[in-house]
Image (cartoon, rainbow, N blue to C red; front, top):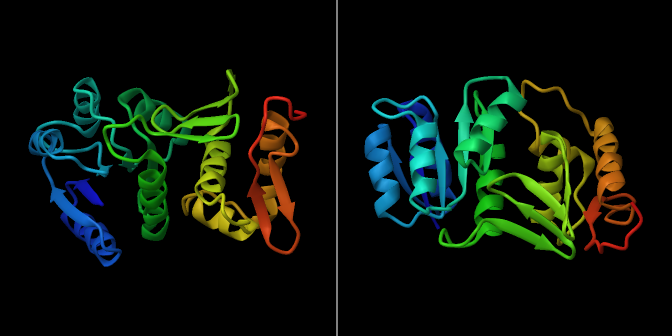
Length: 227
């Protein structure tokens, strides 16, 4: 798998690159917006890690131009802002798959790279996850149950996406809390059931099962499941 890191913080870019190379990813690093745009346009990357605050061309402009050119590889935006909802909206409008705030939790970033690459497939395909009647577009961050759109919050989306990309096993509440929230957002395992209940209310009570002693596992929903 080949990943492009487009980040003007040289030390951070090298930290991320080193982590990904240790996981056997092929990594390209660039610190300039216009140059990064050309590199992304000319090469088939499986994922991109993108900083909005780039010289010569800002990251969101790079991303919009990639999307306008028909590129659909997953893009994880690294933002220095703590305004979660407004930043997510701006990133989604530009075509981001997901975003993380700085300072970056490298372990969490690695989980998101794994998840986006595994769920999206080759960059020539539309990045989406289909699981029974459930469909998640990881580019627009939209969710459907059958043909009906389901409105989820950013936190609900993150937990749902993580459950989907780990659908082969039950996921402990501690893992859901640790892997899906940045360090500046206080979340504990005790709060996870609140988000699980909200997702069950929206997707059907049987969609997320509790595996006692292990955690939560997503089950393929049908449009006839009770909501």
